[in-house]
Figure 1 (cartoon, rainbow, N blue to C red):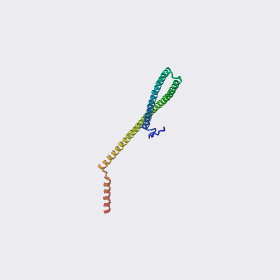
Figure 2: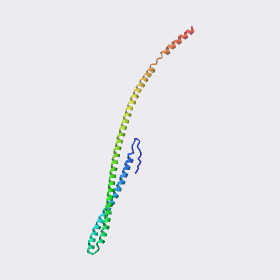
Figure 3: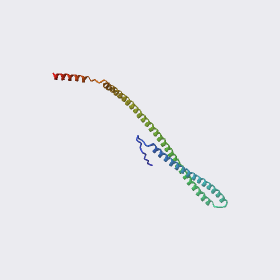
Figure 4: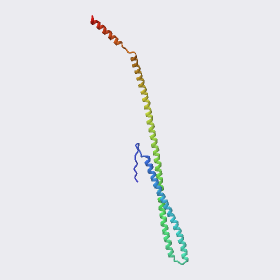
Length: 191
């Protein structure tokens, strides 16, 4: 039976699909084993009945002997019963073989379940490790960005203080010098 599982983003199969398939197969196998066991019990019951019938036929054979029935007739009945018994024994042997095959299949499915569980746990552990690595990288990045932000903020604060000092104490000496030069020029022009 070919089964196709959806593949995961990180590789492998979805564990839920594998486990669902295994559960389904295990249930089907259990149902088949139960049906075979029931059939086997029925055959064994028939076998017991046939043995009982055979015993009864043997008793009847003895009674027939006493009642002067011919040995050939009794032999014929006994042969038919033995043939039927042999047929039932062969069928029971075949059912035992099938039952063993189903038991082997059941053990194989159990191995598949165990392996799937192990692989799921390994995948989970690898994913947790990757996520932890990502968290650590993000934490380091946040620390670096916070440090840079604080540094830029400090530099900006210093520039703002310098600008505030310029605004509080403006250097207007250049204007005064220019006014004096203009007065001098004006007085030179008037003379």
